[in-house]
Amino acid sequence: MKKLLAPRKPHSRLLALLLPGLVLVACDNSLNISPTVPTFTEINTNIGAVRTLEISGTLAAAQGPVIKATILFDGQEIEGARSRCQEIEGCSELELDGVIGAFAGHHTITFKVLRQEADFEEYLASGIVEISRADLHLPEPAHLDLPPTRATLQAGEGVRFEIDLLD
Image (cartoon, rainbow, N blue to C red; front, side):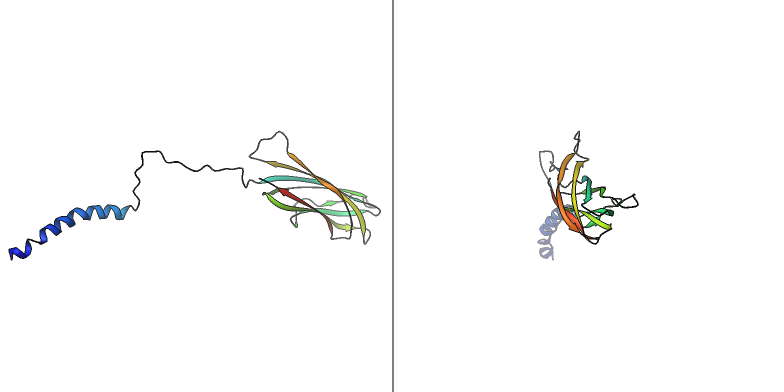
């Protein structure tokens, strides 16, 4: 019987040595040995930053008065951008303004006529966009001119401008 127990002793000693090592490896899958300090990748906060666009412009009617208009940004009305003529007989020119935040990319700005006196009216639309970013402390915002554009519109239609905001 002594002969049967003797060969088992070396296996149990080997197992006793390996078992604590296996337990340590099972608890922590990663073992990092490094003489250097860990480094982190730099994050560029300027990419993808929100810009504040202050849009202002005019819709000037050639003959009949314009009564109500608004500004759309990418097809959605800018909150607080509706403008209504205060004159009883209507206005030949209506001032529009609105503020919105936007990311870099291709965008559309539309000066939309909501109400006018005639079925169709010829308009001259023009404007300016002031672009600023909170992360850039510039003394003045960048200016983008919306070129004067003529269009014959009925109520519900608008003059559309396309802009590209770059990072």
